[in-house]
Image (tube, rainbow, N blue to C red; front, side, top):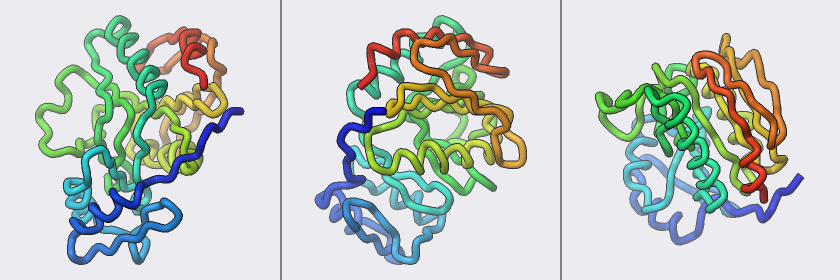
Length: 224
């Protein structure tokens, strides 16, 4: 298993800019590179305002009521997402894999996640205003892990629960720490009932409603 260099969530410069723009009732702290809200919880309306005011390049998420900073992707991360986009153009041309899609997730849609990609019908999101779209009608979400110290909790625990609670049929996790793909499916009562894992190079069946077979040999070229 390769972990690489674990990056902090946020720089001091970005934190100071964000803290200066925060709503009056939101007090932010930066502890050991991690962003926190005093009191540990933040209201959805305050989060959305804070996310709108965030410095360029800083993407905020609200997962399980907690404020998160999504790491900036590196080049291999971007290559993996582009590989998937090109595949879906060929395999499911009536659909689109939307990169960096903001979604309302979790119980009662109070969570807000910046998915690395979201699979939905063409033009699915154009009728929705704002940065955060409702997750209804999304067939699959994709997350590609980053080499930061919070990826285990964020991508392998919190987002699994949030996407399942939103009823998204399939969550594809491409885990660069151990060169595997995990296919979460069949959400029921806020939990995915299936979660088989496959090594890079395997032939991976993405279940209904995605119904796509992935030959993942190419992912070996992007291994860290």
